[in-house]
Image 1 (tube, rainbow, N blue to C red):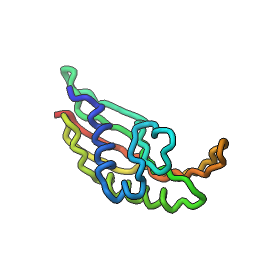
Image 2: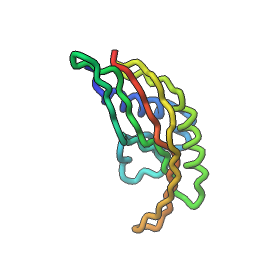
Image 3: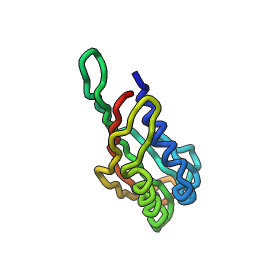
Image 4: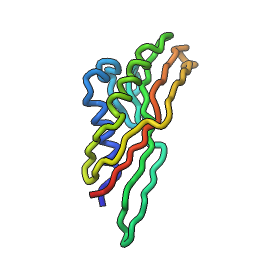
Length: 139
């Protein structure tokens, strides 16, 4: 049985491998948390996972829902907005090629647009991106 973590790694690798996105978010792409001190980055987090069973303990397909968002500081959301647009270009209908799986679908199903104020240093953070569904079938 393939390891579902390969799908996580494939999402991160696809995003980190895009030079345009990395120019907008030079601190990189991280799963769950960015390192302390990061200023412009992409976060990926798994929100949901479902496996469709087959007979004899096999899996027909797996469906993942990921939060994928650009995070950037400043009073303007221009960097986060441009990075979210690039995330969408990279992931919409993408072939992720995770080890042990065949791609079925990658698509945004919900848009994310948030802003927060860091209470400690009063810095404004802009979040832009979306929820992406990824469907794969084990080989």
